[in-house]
Structure formats: structure tokens, C-alpha cells
Image (cartoon, rainbow, N blue to C red):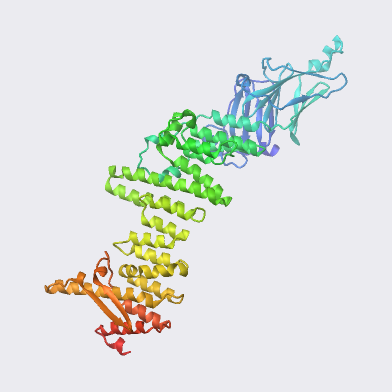
Length: 605
């Protein structure tokens, strides 16, 4: 300890002076693990020496003294007042003395007198009074938890023994620096050993009680928040400084636990505490950590769900108005609880649990989004649009993508398709879950009037196994060419080596060329004022390489969007020929396209 005192005395940068009330005959300071206690006339002054100087400046600014942190004065009167609320500790007195022996009598009702000696253990203050009372004070509870009277007179001693050195001298508590939990009581020629049997056994209880007694001012009630506030803000709310201090105290209580059962109790109490103070999301996080014996899944999920469903059951929120308001405002506490439970299911590779909880979570995400969309018209158009883009799809899509391998895809797709869900949300999940057809259909339905859906569909097809993607290439070739001809040609050429047949794609390519020619004719007619031909009634039949291909103009003109690329068809046909295609129909149609060009050079080559 000399090094600690030397460091404190040498610290002149933040030097300050603190005057303690009253006076005593002599100073009595003890120290264990940089924690000190000083006997004064009115109480015990205690604190901790911060060797690292991390809190020195802030302590001085707050009125503290230099390197001494967590300091305070514990009045003797407060110990007596709190003693009635304290539980009996595990300390006991073991007497050992010289001839004549000692007697130890318990008396917890005698008044407390200013101590004559002081000792310190890792978890308790120990004081000795003039009438030989040894009092054990829990440092966390700050109250007397046990009081013992040590009587050194035996019944066989004569009256003259009352005048010996032992009876006239004051006792003293002695500490062993090698064993901080061992304290000795010396009085005259007698020496009494005060032992601690599992001194830290009940410390976690006192620390937990201190957590519950900590004053708390909850945040604003969740019900006062706008329904259109950021959904992500509900889930990722930062803790306030007060909440951080409370969390640190709960963590300290948990650190004092010696087994899993004690830690489970601390976690359950922690959850109930936060719920009663209106922090339902934080409470749900700790409910999910509790074992089923303390917080069964069904009971906890119902507790978090009932207020939002309009069922006013005081048992579900413990009669706390703050808890009720936070649960009525949003489903986020329930979502938080279910998401943490689902995470446990993923770790255990429990697909059934993940699918059941995942289906419930999907419904909850969709419900929350529906509520915000219903209230969106009440906002300014720009705000409503930005909220729909940033919030509606992000959280649901993130949840689906993160759990695609742990849930039954068909079940989730049925839920998604039963709601007003954007096709792009279904497309990403369907693609990752292996339902390529649904993914492509959903992607194409998104970009019906632009090229975004076509490129997304091409990406899904390009990343899928060929045996699953091949029939979808043929089915959607015309749509892909009409919306993204360049990307479609690149995709077709990439899959040619894997077996994508040019013969089955050729009708779609001819369809695209016929439509491109029809639109060019439309532009010419509108420019010259000539009478338009009824394209919707015309049909053309082409014989290419012995294959008869019939094109219906009505079908060509029904696609909502069309992107012209006069080189797309030629580039594809040239590409497959360069890769080794020898189908006569491909050569014949490529020659017919060359013949329509104003430049004869490609045809001559």
C-alpha cells in the first residue's frame, strides 16, 4: 500500500483539501486492493485510489480530491437505520484465546457506539465498539448485516479478574495484508480470529438491490412519438448516460454471481426493471437471455404482444403505466425478443423454430410497415416518399436476406405474396432461397416501365444454376431483349457454352427485330403524314433455314417499354457463331440482317 499512498501524496496537479467533520483521538485508516476506509467521529470515509489517473481531472472538477474516486462518507446513523432491511450475512466469530477462554454472545439490538477500531475486507467494513460489539457492514448495502458481542470473561473467573489488563484495555482489529479476508481481534492477551466463510456469497444480492433502488427517469413515453418516426430508430436507439450507468451497475451485479442460476436471476430482474421504467426494447433483449424456467417463451411473447393487440392485462406489463405505453406504441419490443430467440435457433440449427419465429417476424415487419404507410399521407409528400424508400424495404429485406437459409422459403413466400409487398423484396429473397422462377417474375414486374427489373432478372439468372435458369431464359427472352437488349445479349452469350440453345432463342430475337422495325416505320409515318397501317391486324411468316417462324404483330406491340439496339441481334448471332455454333437457321437469319444494312461490308465478309 505504500506505493499507493506515495502516488497520491506526490500528485500535485489535482491537489485539493477535504475537511471531515468531528474529531477522534487517533486516525485509523485501513486499505485493501486500493480501496481505503478512514474512521471518523461521524462515520466511515471511504474511497478508491485511481492509480491510472483516468478519472482524476473529472473527480476534481466534480468536487473530489485528486486520485481518490468513488469517495463518500457513511454515517453511523445511516448504518443503524438500514440495518433492519439487511439480511443476515455469512460471517461468524471463531474464538481462540489463552487459558480461561472467551464467550461470544449475539446481540443485534444494542445501540451502536462510535467505533474504537476499523478493519476492511474485499466486501465489508468491520468496526469494533467500546462495549466489544463487532459489526459487519456490507460495502454495497451500506448497512450493518450482522453484529456480534465478544465477551472475554468466563463464568469461572473470580471478581479480581475484572481488574486485569484485558478488561481495562480497548480492543483493536488487526488485518493481514497477505489475506485480506482474514481479520483478528486483539484485546490484552486475548486474540480472536474473525473468519469469513464465502464472504462474497450474498454480494450479488446487495448489488442487485442497489440497482433496483437507483432512481430512474424514463425517456419520453413511446406513445408520444409519432407513428411515422424512423422504425430503425426504435431498434437502434442509443442508451442515455443514465441508462449506461444503470447497465454498468447491473453488469457489476452479474459479475458478482458465482453460478448460472444467480446470473439468470439478475438477468430476469434486469428485464423487469427496464420494462417497468418504459424501456420495453431493452427489457425484451434481456427477456430473451433468460432461461425458460424463469421466463417461458410463450408467456413472455404474449406479455409483449397483448398491449399492442388492445388487450389491457395489467399482469402483462406489471401494472406499470410506462411499460404499458411503451408496449402499446409499437411492436418493436416483441420484434426484438423474437429476433434474439431466432438467433438462438440459428445457432442450434433448429430450422423449425426459425421458420415459426421467422413467419411471425415477417408478419410483424409487414404490419409495422403498413401502419406507417397508412399514416404517410398525413406528412408532406417529400417526407413520405423518402420514408417509404429508406425504411419500408430496408429492414424487411435485411431480415429476409440474413435468414434465408434458416426458414422454409415456401412458407415465407406465401406470407409475402399475401401482403402488398414490393416485387423487388420478394425477388431478392426468392432468388436466395432457390425459387428462381418467382424471383425473375417479381423482378420483371418491378421494372415494367424501365430497365431496372430486366437487369435484376438477368443478374438472378446469371447467378443461378444453369439447369434451373435455362427454361427461364427461353420463357422471358422477349421481355429481356425489349427492356435491356445489351444486357440480354451478354447474358445469352455467357450461357452459350453451358448449353443455352440459339435455336430456342431465335424466335425471341426475330420478335425483337420485327418490333424494332415496326417502331421505325411508325416514326417514318408520323414524320411524312402517310396513313398508318393497322399493325395489330398484320401477321408475318418468315422461312429461315427451313424453319417457319410466325410473328404476331399484336404481341409485339403490347410490351409497355422498349429499348432499341440495332446491333443487339447481330452481336448475338455473331457471338454464338464465333463460339462454334453451326446451326443453319442462325447463319440464314444473320445474312438477312446483313442484307438490310446500308453498309454491305459485313455481308461481303
